[in-house]
Amino acid sequence: MANIKRIGVFTGGGDAPGLNAVIRAVTKKAIIKYGWKVLGIGQSTMGFLQPEKNVWLDYKSVSGILPKGGTILGTTNKGDPFNFPVEEDGKIVLKDVSQIIVDKIHEYKLDGIIAIGGDGTMRIAYKFYKMGIPIVGVPKTIDNDLLITDATFGFETAVNIVMEALDNLHSIAESRDRVVIVEVMGRDAGWIALHAGVAGGADVILIPEIPYHLKSVIRKIDERRGYGANFTVIIIAEGAVSAGGETSYLEEKAAGGMKRYGGAGALLKQNLERFIDSEVILTVLGHIQRGGTPCSYDRVLATRFGSAAADLMAEEKFGHIVCLKGTQISSAPMIDAASGQKFVPMDYDLLEAARSIGISLGD
Image (cartoon, rainbow, N blue to C red; front, side, top):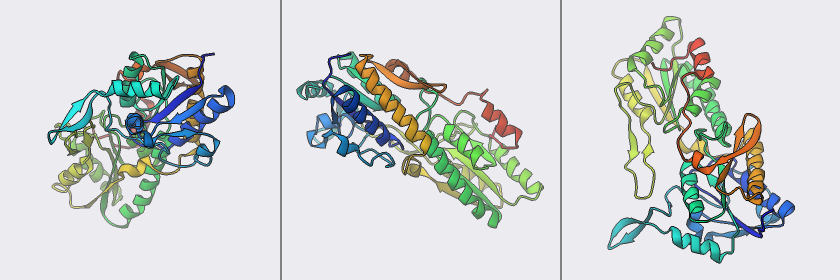
């Protein structure tokens, strides 16, 4: 076993239900099995630049956090230390502050770091690994789009939240001649929209992997009217695009940040209203999908991941990330997690199942 006495743990990127369950599992296993001290690093790697955000974790620190959403350590997706925004002469410029963070890791006498995050966080973590930092990863994204794992915690909770919203909106749609559009997260991959759409009884599911035709959506609306249904429920991922290439963004990419998708639902609403007489209602769920109490599946998976991450650290499998393969916890090189995204495959059986029960995918 590695000669480890102190480790650090941080959460990076967007919020996801289950983050606290990972922190809890890492901390408890580190203390109980290995006798390590655990530093909770605040706001991703920002805690090394602002030490007041950091806290040494113990039993009391992680008591009662299992059912809580968010992360007790805080997180950010605007603090890439290799492209960190700083103000110089009244202008924002990007600088590499990674060596400062490496020096701070040594000052804290940390023997390893556990990084919890998505593909962006893993790319940053891998760069630190290449700089000589002993680091292991835990995959996190509600989008379920990381290549190296069959599932990520937070996804099932997000799907349940969207499903419940669809259940509630069905009554709104049925009460009058309405088309209800629900926009959900999914910049590049449509896992949430697809799974929640099927579970929530959507009539049309639009995902980034399948460019949609407006005529196909209108055809489905007319088809439903033809057999007496006076409403249609459409779920659309924020990154969905029309066959003509139309998409939209909420805002320009900020320095050091990610481009934010959004407005896909508004664009579809605007286009539909040009051709149909029905009232079109849009609901954008946004960050509601990232919050709240994690479901049992996500609590269990997050706990398994946190426990396995501590074991990876003890086994000196640095530069690796825990993952789920089938029903078994495994590990893979961190670079694989940062090498691309997992998209909904065109031969995915749920796509065929959706089509077979009359759901339109817009193609």
